[in-house]
Image 1 (spheres, rainbow, N blue to C red):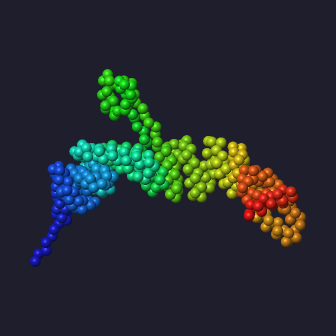
Image 2: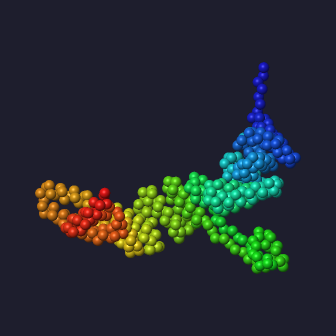
Image 3: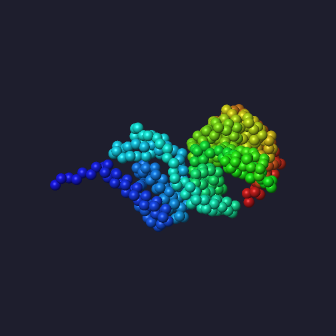
Length: 455
């Protein structure tokens, strides 16, 4: 018996014909109003299509997106359906590259990237204009209005996660009708962030950054006969200039929110522990917006969290140079400088600068106190070692140096206590400092205070 050989080409061709047949049947069912049959046919087609949409010619692919999107929308999956329908408007923005694959199947790739990724030589670029866009607008508009209203109501009721879902849904519904308005995505991301749903907020913010969305819009305004200013699309606005019913024609351009998008994305990355991504994004943002103080501040935060102290110090120096009245940056700079014995003088100057701005900054008084006292544990070890070795002269010298440091630190500790009197740490420290400097009256006073606070 001879073997039957069925070529891959024949199998693929049959597969393609089955896809096309089910999609066309579904499309005809929609046109005739039989949505039940359309749903059955498109689900059968979906199982056949899988990831092989490159085998569908543009008209069939459009019909597939249309029916599948409609099926999802009418099944209550508005966002998924809108996302599917939005693929049709995307078809108008891309060239379709046609050619044949290794099995001689005719293939269609949408956009430059897909064409390059295919690895097929000699693809021909063509344009395609979908025919279902008016139908989509008619289907989508009432759902879109409802979704947008629900988003606003949820936001006003502080139901932020629900608002985020509805703003996202509104964005994709609007995109399905041919309008790509990133403001709704921005609203969604902020809503999620307000509800601490950073895992939902971050991908949207990154999408906005990568798309280059700025939020800049031009409003076309004119005043009607009653004196009310109305906003129009550009075409209508231009047409109304010929009418006597409107006057005071002018345009207004909204402010860019791109810096805020970078700031919020960086913050979310840092909170998510994605420090390397945050550093890269902030660097990109500061190149676009070199005077952005919030991004500079976040850069310092991520340097600190990443243990990049040298970069953090440079960042803080740059920030205090731009804003010398920022006590927090002076204080943070002092803390980092105090960790290096070579820059203790710089640390002292930084703490004092912070205290010039805010004399009640107790943390700065605290750090200035300990900076002046030096490494007291090490000093005690050295003094005790000299005592045991019987090196009296050196022992007395180190002991006196310690007392001198304590005497210098005492006024700072008193200021610390003045601004943080309920802190037992400063009370016990003052007790010990007064004892070391042989002020018995103050020693007894603070000894009693420490004992009372310990009860």
